[in-house]
Amino acid sequence: MISIKKIAAATGVAATLALGLAAASPASAYVVCNGAGDCWHTDHRYAYGSDVQAQFYPDDWYFHHDWAHDNGHHWRDYHDGRGYYRGGVWIPF
Image (cartoon, rainbow, N blue to C red):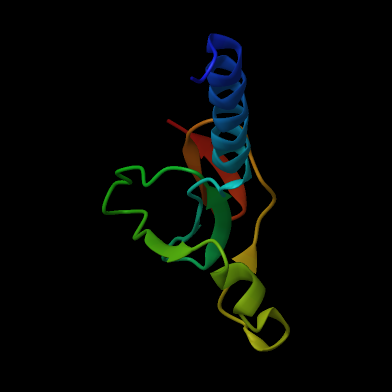
C-alpha cells in the first residue's frame, strides 16, 4: 500500500517540475515596425491606428534581420508602457 507521505512527496515533485517548465517557456513577444521604419519590441499585439501602419514580426525577426544593410528600418530602444514610435519619439497611448 502507498503511504500518504509518498503521495504528497510525489505530488510536490510534480508541481515543482510543472512550475519550472512554465517559467522556462518563453513569453510571447513581437517586433513592431511602423510605416516610417521605426522598430521596437512589445509583448502585446496592440490595435495601433491606421496612421501608424504597424507591421508585426516574431521576436526572433530582430536577430535574423540584416540591420547593417537595411536603410529603411531603425531599431528603437525598449520603452515601458503602451505606445509607439513616430520619427524616433515615443508616443504613449
